[in-house]
Image (cartoon, rainbow, N blue to C red; front, side, top):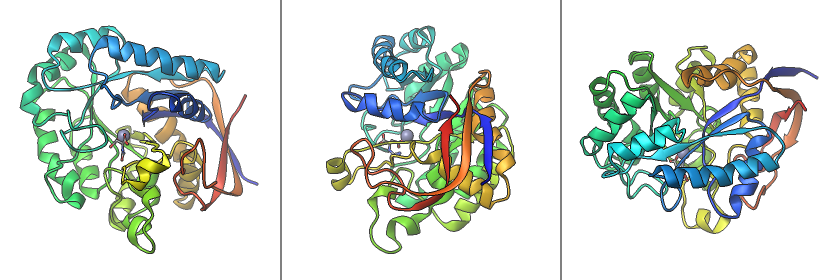
Length: 337
Ligand code: NCD
Ligand code: ZN
């Protein structure tokens, strides 16, 4: 049996949700990740230092109860009219990133940003405070498979207008986005999810409709997946792991919610993918080194063990259908105590 010991990974994009589910999702993330950058698209949105801090306290209490030592990296949500002062207050309260959702682009984004000009003061304040701009890079007005590519000129404008701003293009889904991220300066990085690396549109639509693979941005074609894998195994410090784990209860999934509950299976999936690509040696940089460096953090001190052992992803975890439910994965993962 082959096995691998790597520095404990970080998840630089996760939805831990709110209410009773927060406890289970926090505990689940703590099983494989030393730090979690938690997205602010809860209701009401985390758009003030007070809201961010209240949410942080509840998530941190659940992480602490897991006994794992996993830490939360808080974020706020950019909404037009928020104001530069609120951005500065969030930065002082420990925000590591502010999230830009184009209005109407995804779950709970109706109150997002219609145009970058509507948040000029806020972006300048983030630039001055050294807070990373995290971007859901899709133009909701474009046809669904073209939304990411259609947003690249908008992102290009943001990157060029704020020369001191650090930017993360989240959950890359296309070869065009990989090329764009490579072409921007070093202060622009990107997260890639396990599902965009492992699956394509055919997993959603190819045989029977599989809503468990439905997320924003929608999974794309094989050539896009290949470009994402190349970026992830390249060792380039611009590319790092963010699960975009986005659980929805079965009734929400039935009514069409976008999002995959990926955090329980992400590390096993990644190990299988990197192994297939002959690049297991590059896994640690992708999920435990590059992101921490981008965010100016030291690497975690803990370790994650990955070992080759076939297992079937259960139909349900924490009341939710996990990503790849029913599929057989070749690797398992567990924290070294
Ligand atoms: C996320 C969610 O449900 O919060 N959904 C998704 O499909 N990824 C939001 C997001 O990151 O787009
Ligand atoms: Zn997300």
